Image (cartoon, rainbow, N blue to C red):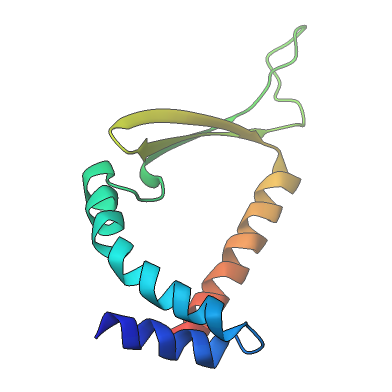
Length: 116
């Protein structure tokens, strides 16, 4: 039963808890599991999700002539869906910012590969 399952989890992961508290949690948790599940399904509780990525490189030009100056930047627009609402998140990154972002994404990828 769900009560037994909760009691076993509490016993194995919450050592040192007062036995009365374990009994209370193992009684209350199963009785609230169904309403919590229904509420989560109705409210569609989920983290925001990335839906689109638009980008371009911006090359600034000198005001006096048409030569390209240093300081190219990445203009990144992320489409993010949060529940029913979708919004655009604009980012502007210089070369160092792009390098940092790529390094972070590589670390995330490496961690995911270790898990999977």
